[in-house]
Length: 218
Image (cartoon, rainbow, N blue to C red; front, side, top):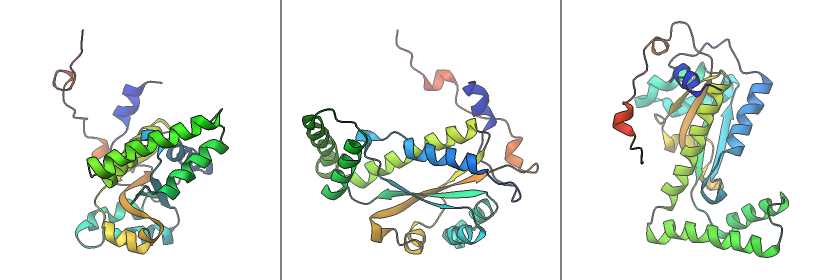
């Protein structure tokens, strides 16, 4: 797989062809990318609201009213739109839910391994909860890891995408009652296929040089 070619092909798509849709197989691949993303201590603090119908996309587009109206077409014309949401709290109930799922999936050969995992994950969460006082931000970071994984994965599948922080978070939280289930919106990603008239597709890539960003240790 040629990652240089893939990364030069992908870009933040500004205009989607509304007539081109992901296949069912491609959507299954997208869901796999979202589910299988890595996260610190496997905490998986995410939830995804996904729209592919016009009605669903119109609900998501409510987050682009007013100041963020420039992002509305990127939602309405896309094939699928994913609202990335992060947990508000990693409480004991959620920690045990994770632990039980891992146990069910066969990750623990012995009961003590399960106990050790729980203790270790709690240590890291408590560092961010009490010492650094940034637990919600730490969980947001895991959601962004997921977003990065998705962007690379869909590019490898030949699917165009654009990540958008330009949405009204409070509106999205209220529209989908996210806070009532322990989550809050973070950002959205639209997926689909570029139009021939998308100006951003023809612009050359611009990245800092290797000399600027790499320190190779001998």
